[in-house]
Image (cartoon, rainbow, N blue to C red; front, side, top):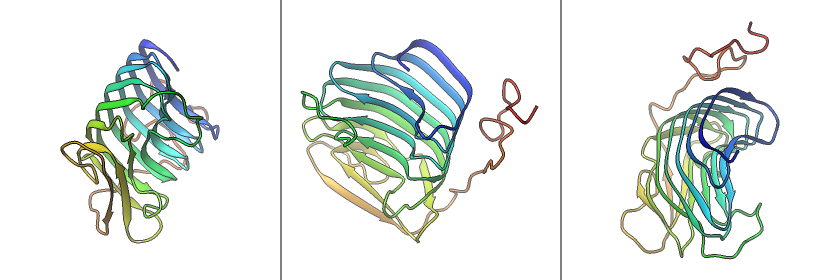
Length: 224
């Protein structure tokens, strides 16, 4: 979806492809009350040349048995994705939780040092990753030539369904929370966590709403 001044809400997606994804040249978009089930999950991109995306707000997103809760992806390119909020996310059984990937292998590399990612906030994320040791709740792989700036992942509080630890991975990502660093420069880092509290979140095996505790604008199919 490439859009400006748009409100997307009360959507359920089961498709093994992307759920609700924002494409280039979008701004002032509110996306809320989303149920992604056996889906690719929500995303931004893939992004390339002349990226210009700003003021995107996702909230109340429930994702289960999908590839990711949120993936922001590019490979080369230029421009900026900035000023976005991702709040109230619940995930269970997903391969990735949050993944920021500036060298996404699913996209052929395009000309440019990389898309700039800045001023992104992730708050009130709960639930469990399928395997938090192999794919931790936070994977932020930013370009060395264009590091990510002012990224706040301190509100992501998730655990693993397999094993007894989570391993987050960060490259050239600056901000706060998990394995992100402050300052500037280039770096590669991993952070292993063996104890997490307050990650528990509701499950919706047969949903009657798009997000736990939020009344849908109309009843879901089969729940009317």
